[in-house]
Image (tube, rainbow, N blue to C red; front, side, top):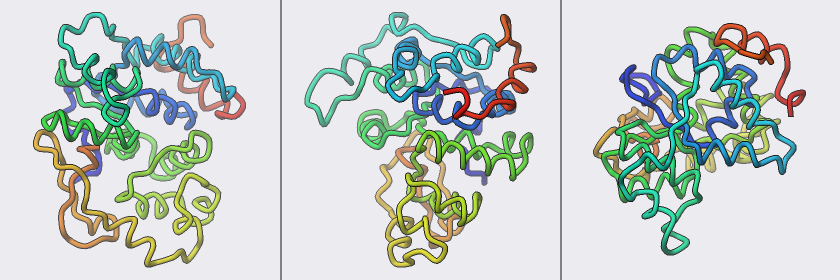
Length: 269
């Protein structure tokens, strides 16, 4: 069994801003998305957030526009949704509500039956509590997709994950920490400040690593959870669920690849 929850190649996949940012950081976004047969969608709310958020000097809005122009991502309008999930997710107590982008992504996923990729822990928890039948994944479901591994090769995927960790501070679910370090190597892991300290040293704190990787408190996911043997991640053989359930004027999907890979993320910020 693979690591990605993107099993059905026909299922639509709606992604939050974090997944777009992580893809942009790899400089391989077009190749990665082209390799996966599923249609990818973002909401216009997330698109607006990425266009407006230049606080860190990022250019994610422009990079997203290139992916949209190349027909690798489509945009769905929040106003076209007819159910009240968005309002339910943004109105209420702070511990029970989300930012507009995350709420719009989840609302689309619930109403349209789309696989929903979000990286933020609070959003993942709320999905598990309110929408147990929703298939929820995270950015790693893209990077670990068999088609991506086949198209790019392990070395290029390792480079992509490393760049996303280094430039976008991609969040790594606890159960994938060892897998990530094994993939990118201890030397590069030491350069990724977003990783726990125990995973940034060559030998590491073994007792702390066990605590971080042997968590069994992932929310139950009746709808789309994928049981993964912990042995795949250096854990025990018990099964766990994927977390929370887990410029060209007219760029094409072909020529956008070379453009992205000729300029690293830092150079395009």
